[in-house]
Length: 272
Image (tube, rainbow, N blue to C red; front, side, top):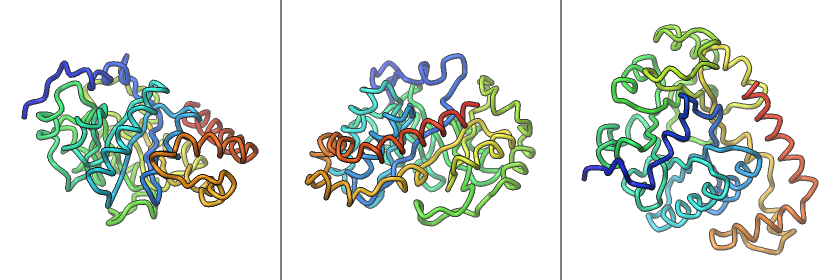
């Protein structure tokens, strides 16, 4: 079906890319359950992240819809952008601001026809050829990776490392650190490094010419959810995630502040 460009669910592109600017980092959710994804999303939002990608694998349609709708509510509370990974056919139902599609997912053209011109559509790339293809397809941003080996994704493409990023960015004509801070060039989509990225990696990654980073395990490794369940006496589920999160903050105030400080430092690093 053709997308409706005036659909109010897809009005974020102008906000996200006002004056050509995209946020410098995106949180890609992870967790053993849908509820764990939602917990980490809420934590990322409270820490200052304003771009969330909900990435659920091996979940039922109903589970994705439930988690997606809660993510929409959480992002609205923080005026954050919400991207749904892969599940193009569910994006309209959960009210996401767009989708991120892998190399084997539905085409960008189909996504654009389905969601409309105002939707934010991102695409994965692993090579310079992939990047050029994504540019030709008209994506709004590119997730280039993986930077290093990561356990958060199955079927991982070849690891790039700093040398890989430098070579790809040089091949496509973006080989200066200036490009990382000057992503207001609207004829070329911003490129985000992704895959096992930690805070100390960021300065060197930005020097390759990428515009931003996407992180996942960096945040989730800092919280012991099982210990949180024991302390709060609440079983984490989609229905209890807000209550659980509040109790976790109350019962684990030191850990909570430590994580917030870590995210705050990460914010400073990526925006330096």
